[in-house]
Image 1: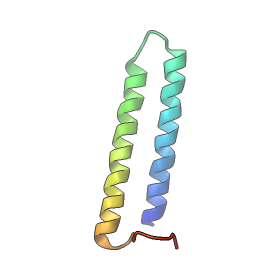
Image 2: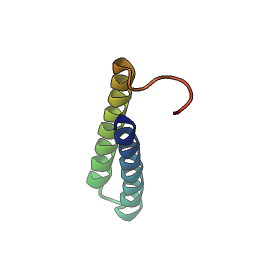
Image 3: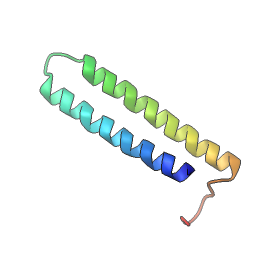
Image 4: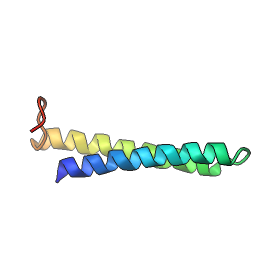
Length: 67
C-alpha cells in the first residue's frame, strides 16, 4: 500500500512538472499558473519524501533490493 502511494505521488509530480512546462510555453507573460504548478510540485515532492521516511521508520520499507 505504501509503495503504491509513493509511486502515485511520483507520477503526480511528473504530471505537475509537465503541466508547468506547458504553462511556461503557453502563457508567455503570465506566471501565476507556472508558480501554482511549482507549488504543487514542491508539496508533492515533500509528501513523497515524508512517506519514504515514514516507511523506513515504520519498517515497511527496507534498503536493498526491491521485493
